[in-house]
Amino acid sequence: QVQLQESGPGLVKPSQTLSLTCTVSGGSITTNYYYWSWIRQPPGKGLEWMGAIAYSGSTYYSPSLKSRTSISRDTSKNQFTLQLSSVTPEDTAVYYCAMGWPIGSLEVWGQGTLVTVSS
Image: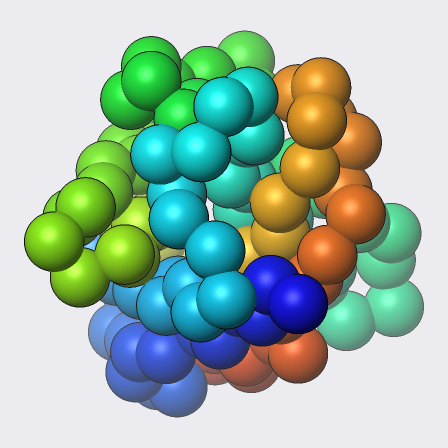
């Protein structure tokens, strides 16, 4: 049973870079043909898919966030990471990592972590 767990700071200051890590257990992030995604949900709003990294290491981003988003991985630790630059209070949200196949299919989710952007 694959499990995902998000970790990272709960508070980030405006203009800084938000960085979160998703640690995967019970399966490998290099397993064909899964995609490992980041999704967020601002307070009172819907879910927003931010991007994904594939089993191959290829990355895919939402066009609306592409200029500020970077997703990478550490296969030795079985982790993948989200970086979102130049954050504003509008980036305050619960951030989730998830996995599935094909891309955009979100079969297994982490529990989510709240990140607040505030000075």
